[in-house]
Amino acid sequence: MRYKKIVIKIGTSVITDENGYLDLPRIKNIVEQIAQIRKEGVDVIVVLSGAVTAGKTLFQEAKPVTSPKEKQLYASVGQISLMNYFSKQFFDKKITIGQILATKEDFRDRKHYLNMRSCFEALLGKEVIPVVNENDAISFHGATFTDNDELAGLIASMLNCDALIVLTDVDGVCDKHPKHKDAKCLTKVDPKETNVFDFITSEKSSCGTGGMFSKCKIATRLSAIGIGTHIVNGTKENIISSVMEGKLVGTEFVAQKNISSMKRWLANSQGHEVGSVFINEGAKEKLLTNGSVSLLPVGIISVEGEFEKGDIIAIKTEYNQVLGRGVAQYNSSKAGALMGKKGEKPLVRCDYLFIIE
Ligand code: GLU
Image 1 (spheres, protein in one colour):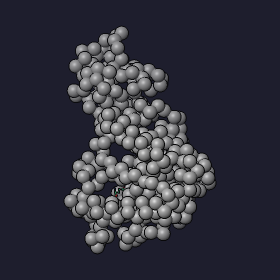
Image 2: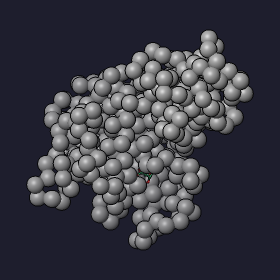
Image 3: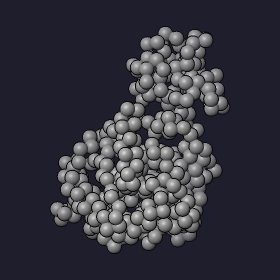
Image 4: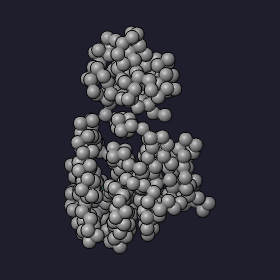
């Protein structure tokens, strides 16, 4: 098997038919593939979408979901029917699954993040397959994940996985719009060489909340922290097995260098910054060219917001360009007092600093 630890993200369009009903033979085939790779000793985490669509069909509702209340209702009801079917299929294969319903808040700081990680580790330690979805029934409207692709990326990064396999209903990323007759699927993408965003639109899939744009954003981010992403057609039989056997299917975003788990966490902490520091050109140059440099007060030109020791802060240029994120070693008042001074303790130590490349 090509990988030892993976996240498989299953999109709504893969497991439901055109009327929104669960596609039972397809789910069966997916479960069979997962059971097989689990048997070979691979740790698998499943991120499963489809609760809202499944709930909607139970109410025989045809019109699109418009209000947050409707979404909460359908998610609450649909999650059960989805898990009922999946757990039965896994049970038949003698595999235990555990459900984790997450909200964006569960990743808000290092404490919550580590709590989440230990939950996954507890399940994986007992060979239980975690099956994750966003807790759409109680997710706070306005503070939700962009989609389950984002959630899957966070989990792959948090658990130090080798790869993320995204099952969707198209063959991969094309060099033209997929409806174009000359469109060809890109088999391998090195985000440093190919800008896939030149080829894709921000169109979303008809049933899930994600789309190719968001998938490519996550894949590019994961590639930069050493995790490969495969975007493949989950409606095709045995596609997961093909990826695991190393066959050229769909589009692979090739993994770049590997980074520490602290830096991975910071890489995925966008939106959780408590304050910002602005740095001068000299400091910027140093941070961009040398991976083992700490952020010293001498390079700081201003401090924004109130943060405490241990909070995540954004590091910005004087022109407000975000360079990265780090964990503050002391609070904002001290940072303000030391700003511009030489020979002082770093505000962010290099191990606690992530620079966006
Ligand atoms: N959490 C949503 C659901 O279960 C799906 C989100 C997505 O499509 O990314 O219906």
